[in-house]
Length: 349
Image 1 (tube, helix red, strand yellow):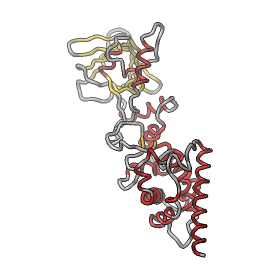
Image 2 (spheres, helix red, strand yellow):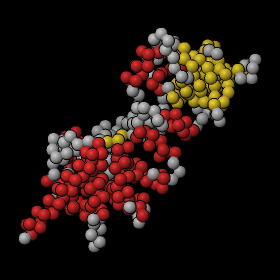
Image 3 (cartoon, helix red, strand yellow):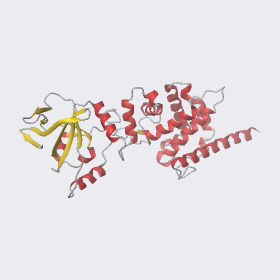
Image 4 (tube, helix red, strand yellow):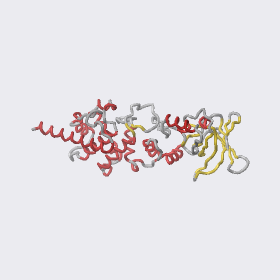
């Protein structure tokens, strides 16, 4: 098994077989050739196409150094031959055993989607080190994403937000299956949301360059909000999504300067996001029966205390982190709300 060239056609001699329920090719080829014929389908956060994480140059450089050492090795690189125009690639049966085959690739077309080898190949364009590979045959992009998810769902360093985004793409009823993810993606897509294009999915984006938090952090905070308020027992998923939207719009209305300077304030830090969604749950759960917890009510309620609270990274919440830090932050915000109510009562007397 190996690689060769015939005119402008690249030839990869392989063994054809099955990996459980999928047909695959197994073979060996120089890293430089595999690099030249393949591509990583990195998620474009603006269009929603693709599914892989951003390239980590250090990760790739580390593998390049390692694979050139004596005694180094690696498990097979995993690709997929996506359905392509006629002539882009062809699998030819060879003489001999039935499992002998040759993959013919026209010119230097990039027909091999990198399912699980993006970082191993990232810095190998000029190295002819022989590497093993396994290639699925004809998986659709959706099927490819499913395989990628299975392989990488426990991978160290893979963005949990990216895997969450994959789940959303593959779900049949996201609102029912994972309402917190449904609401979080709504907040990211909705043009009127302060979080529009501001939640990092782990891919590439040309917009939202001041992205403030990850999708995973935000959805975990939303999940806690849903658990505490039980809002989905009486209202639809879209009602709940607009309630979360109203809260964050109200917050930005009350604290515009703090929102515009995320590096210097805690509103969009992990602790801040969790604590503020807890505050949203407090406000919703304690709304008087003769009131509606809409945007106007939220603006009025937040105005009573939020302007007097020090949200800066050097202020009241400085140094707080983890679940313990979130609990402390929530109690500090609750104390600020109580104090503001006492002041109002005092002034009324």
